[in-house]
Length: 410
Image 1 (tube, rainbow, N blue to C red):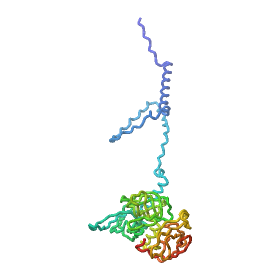
Image 2: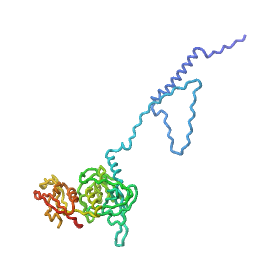
Image 3: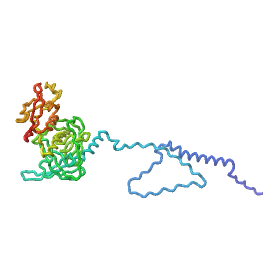
Image 4: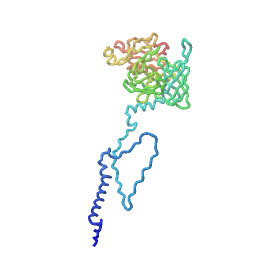
């Protein structure tokens, strides 16, 4: 009798179902660990990083493959929120990165630079081989919206052609209104259909040694250039060819050839001086004509074409302060020393002598040469001023009748 094979074992008993459930539970736990929990603790270096393409020709990107759809009848896994990214470091704005000193300079430049112009000249120079054209370059400061520009006498002296280039690049023809070789100042005029940006002249009498000084000009014809420094000294005298320019502001702001006639500006954007000279082969030594002098001269040059300068006829011999007074037993702690008196001058006719100390003009205290010059140049020809002087520890009141300064005087 044939033996029947045993019936196959069905896969539906209780043991089989338990195993299936265990496998499914393990899969679910793994998905949670792999998708949510573990990425929070795995070091970023092991996580997927974006791929940065190497430089080269652009290649059209291939669209990513469509995501696989879950089998029908199943629920897609719930979306998990990505781990919060670390906040990005704030990027400082351009203005926030500037110091307060830098912002001061920037604001001053924005205010004054539009009023500083480039001046290019052409003149005829006589040589042993004949007459040849010569070109020069300098700077100037627009002081009135109707086109009046202050510059140096030596910038335009002898010029047959003057071209003025504004900050916006527009070129205009300039003509000389008047010059003053003694102060190395000149005024030129340009015609413009619209008002020009003008700089404000400050009070140089309030300038202090050590304060910020900003020079704006056209060195070497490079275009508008800004340098910064401080006021190094006051009341300096500088020897120029055939001329001594007195009562200058000394500054450490770089003043190079071509800066002549440009502006020396304080931190408030006021012009305190007109740049005029440098000492050759020196570093950080430049000079500017005080704005108090430039203002008076500018007004006279515009009104008369020349400077009608009141004249006393005394030579500057130094200043007196408390230390100097104590060291030399002078009897006064302020004033300017008279080094010499010019012949036939108002001072000589009034009896002023070398060694006298001028301590006041019409009752106004004189501390330095700048004070003295300012008090005299604001007076009129023929006016009588009373000088308070100290001589041999005695105070005297000396009336002096001002005359016009002769062309050959110091």
